[in-house]
Length: 82
Image 1: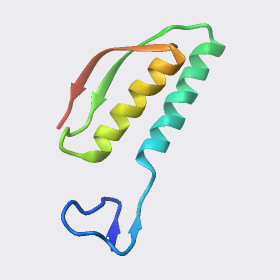
Image 2: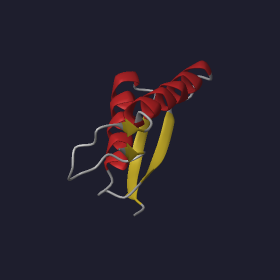
Image 3: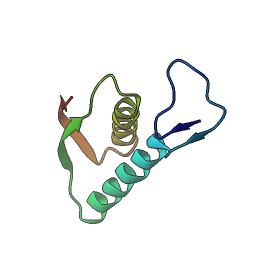
C-alpha cells in the first residue's frame, strides 16, 4: 500500500492520496474566474517544486493548461524550487 506518493518501482495493491492534477486544475480555474470577475489580466511567477517529483510536474502541467484554456493569466517565469 502506498500513501500520498505512488511507488515508482513496485505496483501497489492500494493507494491513498489526493488528485494532484485535479486540485491544481480547480485552483487555477478559480484563480482565472477571480481575475475575470475583477477584470484583471494576471501576470504570474510560478514557483515549481522539485522537477523530479511527479506531483510538481502535474501541478505545472495543469497550471499551464488552465492558463492556455482561459487566457486570464500569463506565467512570466517558472522557477524550480527543489
